[in-house]
Length: 153
Image 1 (cartoon, rainbow, N blue to C red):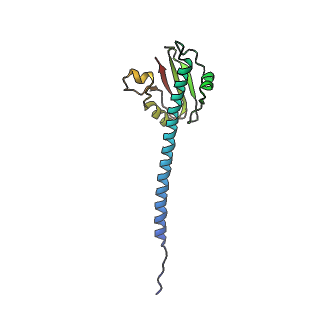
Image 2: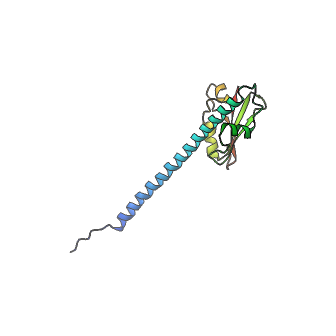
Image 3: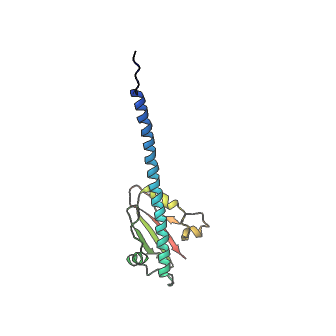
């Protein structure tokens, strides 16, 4: 009798199944890395925006002179966020010594993630003795969610 050396069909299917599991795991890791990178970029962008607004308008008693196009042009930060939406600035009508940074165009999960993040220098975070995130918003289905963070005095 001749001895055959080769792979059986069952061995090949087993190898393909193992490769499929490894590939699926890689896709999950890559997706998680992209989400983490986007949230990190939003955090950095908001910090740059807040720093820029404070340096440009810090000499005034209030932030009623906020103008989106002027501010974003002066601080060299794009008003586009990594989620496909925009950043917007507005003065808090109840207190002109405060301004609001809004992050628009978020999915429900991204909205929920940014609302629960601790925005350490925000008004809501500091006045709650660091017990609340400092962000507000409603996270509904779809990609039109907005997170707002108030800064100032």
